[in-house]
Image (cartoon, rainbow, N blue to C red; front, side, top):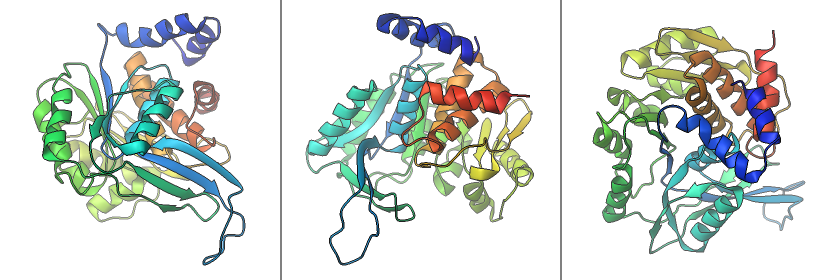
Length: 336
């Protein structure tokens, strides 16, 4: 089924039928799959524009938006927009945590966060009009007991299930949290996607993640080189494979993207044409798009095109990409 065919089916069904169609792609692979994202430190993102900002004075917003944030949550949102049922896991606390869950429910994203009894989930202030300046909160302290509670939830994952690990690890948690999770699931056949930087990424490669997604700067930092072009990144993507990664998806902003696939193929594409509106979550959207494409067809090139389309569609939009926005970019990516 092509993306266009899928879109026409969705538009011609009622709400109840839409849910059945959305789930069909997962069930058709041989049983219903559990798809989970993990966000250790979710946030409520307060995104504001301030005209003529002045330090030391009272400034007023000209626009404002509040959205649930965190890399795993972004992945969950785009997956849901593309018709992939999934569950957002992680930790939440206080009234901000309650609002994060409420907003996710409002967006149709299912969550199963572990409540932390003390502290409050973070609020991140993002000043759109001041060169992307952000002020990020700290979030609650996460105890060893709560970490074990999360581990028990992850123990239910089985062969063919999908787990997304994305973002940084809070200071109250072990630095090797990703390693601990992957070691615990090693040998179970869970498809694990890792979107992390430097040591967080390198240290989990021995557990053969299905997909890793560094950008060209992060990939260059790992090997101590500067990578500017799509051709530059290919040999270093292969080096990550030599260390254990199965598929390496490298995002390069305006330069496009490269996929070094598990079967030895290499795919590359320039960035689709469009106006950058909001780059927040574009990388997370690329990961979600790739895995949505892979789960639909198990075809590397199709998954790659879906990844580029979802990432660019989010960058061209105020919010995370909708299915219709992804479809429009997909048609541009695949034309000719």
